[in-house]
Amino acid sequence: MSDKPGEGQKLVFAADLGGTYLRVALVDESGKIHHQAKQRTPKGDSPDYVVDALASAAERWRSEDGRRIAAASIMVPGTVDNENAVVVQAPNLPALAGFPLKAVLEERFSWPVLLENDANAAAVGEMWMGAARGCRDVVSVTLGTGVGGGVILDGELWRGAHGSAGEIGHSTVDPFSNLKCKCGNTGCLEMFASATAIVRMTREDLPHFAKSVLHREELTAERVYDAGRGGDELALSVFKRFGVYLGIGLANLINIIDPEIIVIAGGAVNGWDLFARDMQREVAERAVRVTAQQVKIAVAECGDNAGLLGAARLAFDKLAGE
Image (cartoon, rainbow, N blue to C red; front, side, top):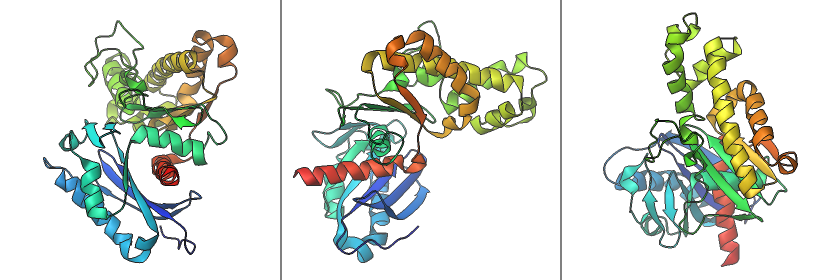
């Protein structure tokens, strides 16, 4: 994707450093994406693989638009120490744990570099250019391999005292569950309302649904969704549970934060028509009624670009404040 930026227009090199894919883009101050690319995230025991991949991606556009690039903004799937610009933990990219990514990239890029958690950036992207435009109290919930979250209060991203605010996926929705989450806890929302959870719940329930078409399928969340659209009882049962647990999690958020809007994003949101009714029923029953009636729950509008847009917006805001 390529579109020539206007003369003198500032750009941010935004990168989404996912566990599977590295996505990069050049974004201008109006939220327009001028170049975009995607590649597999490099694997290895050394953080140098990641640094080299980011530097190589940036070099593609440096010769053409280098003078206009004002900063780089990198999203990391994990906890970022914003004070020291260090990746504290990144379960899907363990080589980055404790690594001073900001300092190393600034030396390679010669641009100021901002690091941010990927779910936080997605929340900002939806507030800037997506479903939460015009709102100042926003919660973004990303339903992917896991469950991520970002919280914006009075127009400002809320990172918390230790940089880990918004870990919605690790809120407890079933204290009696023995299912252990990767965080070490049991009963986490992520264990019931993620793409991984859809596959696990389907596999566990298969013996009880002898006529399900999913006996003949290699299980993926997408295939379970397709089966549900076709009326498969097992798939419908799984998405019902998915919706119930998600609704419990959202009701807790509404009672604690009282946002204007909750934006639901991520690949699992494709099953919206199969889980939304049960999700909304739980919210109505469990959240403070007067509040729940006013909080909007909406599907994200920016798709995979939400994080890239949010990362760019955060970098432009930082540049404006310096």
